[in-house]
Image (cartoon, rainbow, N blue to C red; front, side, top):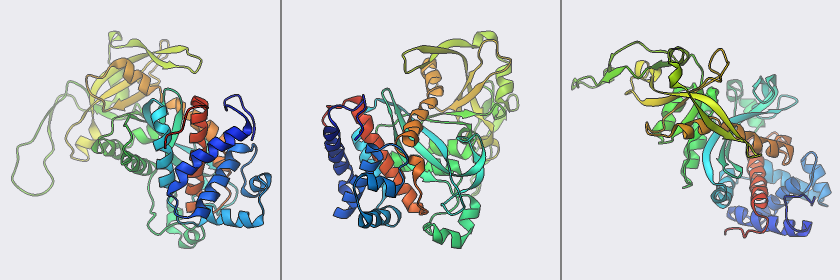
Amino acid sequence: MRETSVLGGTAADVRQRLAAFAAEVVAGLPHKRQRENALLYVRGLVEHGGRKSLWPTLFRLGEDAARYESLQQFLADSPWEPGELLRATAERVYPHLGVSAWVIDDTGIPKDGTHSPGVKRQYSGTLGKIGNCQITVSLHAVGDHSTLPLGWALYLPEEWCRDQPRREKAKIPDDVTFKTKPELARGLCEKTAGWGLQGAPLLADLAYGDDTAFRTGLDNLEFSYVVAVSPQISLFGPETNFVAPPPTGRPGRPRRFLISGPPPRSAGALVAALPEAAFQVLPCRTTPAGEVQRGRFAFLRVVAAHPVMRDWLPPREEWLIVEWPEGEAAPTDFWLSNLPATEDPEHLARLARLRWTIELDYRQLKGELGLDHYEGRSYLGFHHHCALVTLAHGFLTLERLDPKAPRPA
């Protein structure tokens, strides 16, 4: 095993701690060979640099062709539930993080060919362009000290979902149907919420924040959130009044709320009308080096128009958070949050600016642990790989926090 400055003791010490940690996490796998293969795979992810392709990794570990076949079957076809490994990892690592938020994001994984599940030419924010890639949606916990993935969902474009021969080759289960990225994200949140972890506000970029159904779904799940939105989003300002319509006693869709006041305006228009005094300079980010960065923010209580006007839902008051740096011609960022009206403005500003830390996860997951190195063509295998990468990430996180700390059972 490579010696690094963040891992305490000799290589043998670290390998022993890895084996003990992995054994706890995979204890729920039903078969001994599954547990052995999981430990071997995680060893390969942690102990060796370079590309984490299966055969070269096993060769470096001194394994033979028979083990290769066994491990390949374990990844691609063995019917173990990856969510159980994710949950077991979270139960051991999450309490050490000082979690302040959950973050939804997605990442592109460049691929050659057309056979890996979900692969196509599509836009990826990771690539910054249209490219041949897979896209996976992920949920992460962000803490004062580190981060941890909590869930993964591979995005399947509609053309993949309709192509039965292609589905069969990629071993995509029959019950997997087309879902948008926000729908996948909501599913991850709902599943993880059932684990009994201490909750935290959810953060997401405008690809998710602009989706009305996503925000409404989070609120229905009793998630608090701070999500980026575009300046074009339509909002009622604080001067608008809403009156519940009188009951009719008839079945069917309820009548819309009675609205008095100005019509809805874009977030950009609402902010443009604010006086200079509405803005305040607040601490919004502390860098890894300990430097406190500040931003110029305004906070306004608003109601999103779409749920009221299009979905016939009761009005739901939220925070509109806007950052307008001094000297800029227009605001640079907008967020909506369902946190209480009494929420501290500095806390809102810090949450709005916290999502960047997810890059710490992706940097290690890809750069060190081979998240984007899986070469199999199995839908289940992809999620197995992500769960085992998360296990390795969780172990390294605990090592960096305190190499000598005892691991919870």
